[in-house]
Length: 125
Image (cartoon, rainbow, N blue to C red; front, side, top):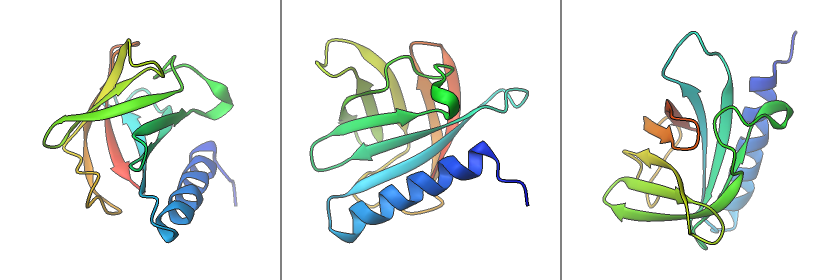
């Protein structure tokens, strides 16, 4: 069986998410794919509800989606998450149609990486 980079990324995010949820720290893990289906690159996004921080992971440390790899996030409207850099001085993206308080595996929605202009769709892992 061939292990793809995508499967490894999903496994890492699931393990991180399960460990966090097990002790009620409230981590939501997403896997994103470009809306342009000719682009097969994926990324992982982990939102920590307790401290409103986020981290982005791409195979081989690429910067295809996000140049900024971690920062803070805020819910500026119901189901609208804005991703910012660490000192909150720059907006780097958004995740819409996500409710971090009751997100569950299989939830899906759209998003955008501001630094690259890529629109994507995500799924909770």
